[in-house]
Image 1 (cartoon, rainbow, N blue to C red):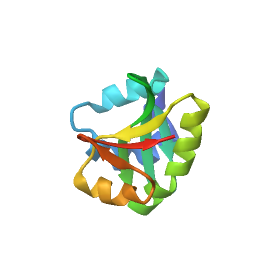
Image 2 (image 1 turned 45 degrees about the vertical axis):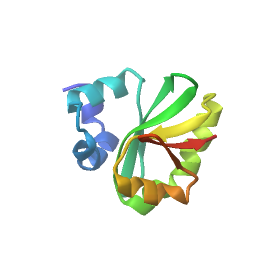
Image 3 (image 1 turned 90 degrees about the vertical axis):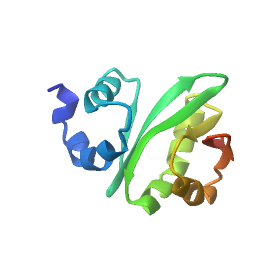
Image 4 (image 1 turned 60 degrees about the horizontal axis):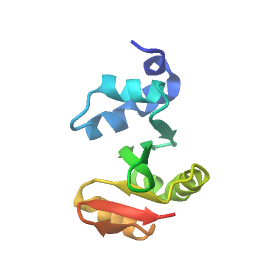
Length: 119
């Protein structure tokens, strides 16, 4: 297994992230993390995985999230600050309806099928 898979932080967060992998495999996730095309944001009871995308505008795409919802929402300011430092203009994600309710207080709005927050 690749070196990241053996890393303590990934192993600790793995159980929160794997249920969120709908179309990709764990091998895809590990490959993206190891190549630096995805970033692991571990916290005490939850974790995000993001990707910095260069589409219509630079965007921090929240690819995966799992664990404690309140803790995930509390991580949004840190994700936002990192995104701004990388030149991103927004945070974005595709998720279940519950995410829209949870992230509304953090400044996310629905844009079509996506949730977005300007930076």
